[in-house]
Length: 415
Image (tube, rainbow, N blue to C red):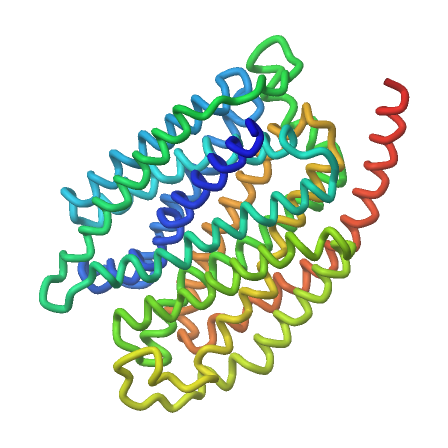
C-alpha cells in the first residue's frame, strides 16, 4: 500500500511538471505575438528551462539522497507555485525567463528523485521498464493537457487573458505539495561515500564506462529530436499550415497525445517483447514519417480554418511521429539504470537529466535557427540526422547492457 501511494505521488508530480515544462513551446509562440521577440530570441526560453535542469542535476544528483527525496520534491513544488504567481503579475518576456529558470531548477529536484525512487518500488528489469514507461506516459498526458489549458484561457480581445492559466497551475502545484507532504516514504536507499566530494565523484567515475558515454549521447540525441519538434510545432502550424492561434496550439496536442499513447503502450509491450526490437521498429517508422508524410503536410493547401474539424486529415499525420519516438526515452533510461547497482542510480539519473537538458536546449536552438534561416517548411527534415545516429546507438547499448547485467548477476550471487 505504501509503495502504491509513493507511486501515485510520483505520477502526480510528473503530471504537474509536464504542463509547466512543455508550455515552453506555447510561451515561445505567445512571446512572438505579445512581447515582440523574433524566433531566435524566443528560443532562448528553452535554455532558461534546460540549463538550470542540467546545472542543478549535475551538482546535487548523487548528494540528493542525503537531503531526502521527499524534501527535495517538496522544495521543487513550493518554488513553482511561487513562480506561476510571479508570471501572472510580471507579464513580460523577462518574467517568462524567470519562470522557466525556476521550473528548470525544480524539475531537476523532482526528476532525480523520481528516477531514483523507481528502483526502490520495483523488483526487476521488466517492472522497472514498465513503471518508467508509465510515468513518462503520464508526463505526456500532462503535456497534452497544456495544449488545451492555455487556449481555454486565451482571448483575441484581451491579449493578457492567457496569463490566468497560471492561477490554476499554481493551485495544482500547491495541491501536489499537500499530497506529497502527507505521503509516507519507506527508508531511502543509502548511498556510500563519506562526504559531498565522494558523492560528486561518482558521476565522473560513471564516465569511465563506455556504457555511460554511449547512453548519454543517445539521451542527448533523443531529447534534441523531441524538444526540437515539440517546442516549434505550434509555430510550424501557424506559419506553414496558416492555422489560427488557438488551433495552432491545440493541433500541437496531437504530438503530445501520441507521445503519451506510445509510452503507455510501451509499458505493456516491454513485458513481452525485447526493448531492442521495439525501439528499432519505432525509430524506423519515425524516419519514414519524416521522409514521406512531412512533404505532403508542408505542401498542404489549407482553406479557411475555424475548428480542428476543418483541417484535412493529412494535416494530422506528421504529429503522429510522437507515437513512434515516445518509447525511446523511458526505455533507454530504464535499460541503463537496470544494468547498474541501485547505489549508482541517483548519480546516473543526474547524468541523464544533465544531457537530456542539454539536448533539449540544443534541439530548440537548432530548430529555431533553421526556422529563421532555411524556413519553417524545411526545418524538421534535419531530425533525420539524429534519428539515424540513434538507431546505431541502440545496438551498441544492447551489447553493453547485456555485459553489465551479467556482471551484476555474478556480484549478487557472490553476496
